[in-house]
Amino acid sequence: MYKYLNESLMNRFLKIPSDMLKGNQRSIVAAAIAGILISTYALYVEMAAEVRPGYKALCDISEHASCSRVLTSKYSKGFGLISDDSLLVVPNCVYGVIFYCLMIFLSTFDNLTLVRVQFFIALSSVATCFYLAYLLIFVLKDFCIVCVSTYVFNAAIVYFLNKKIQILKVKAK
Image (cartoon, rainbow, N blue to C red):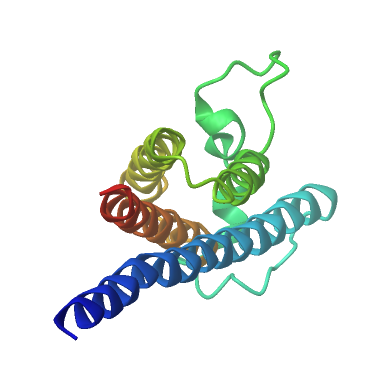
């Protein structure tokens, strides 16, 4: 009987990481899909503001909280770092959509090494968020609800990837 109880408990314990892993992967995908939606809206605002001067987006809350002003600044393309004649000068939100799609694709793998690479990519996106937040606060002196939302989704992805690494380590034992 004692042996049966141990096997039963062990089977439950081994099943928990699998269930946790599925839920965690869903969380990563959900955060990435939300990021894609927000980034797509940012691209829409940026393009509409370029085509129609004076365009007022839904995210333009006040004089100091205007996403259309932020998304049409010189820092909104190529992170403000790439020269204007480069092919890489595209709206930052396009890089965001690519990043979120990559996160969704990589989240389908349960290889610990690959998840660590994904975690490093996500961490680099958070570093980029710090740079963009610095520009937002100290250079542009504005607030962009769309931008800050992407920062939150990037941080959530890092959190869930860290959790996924811990789950995979337990599962590997």
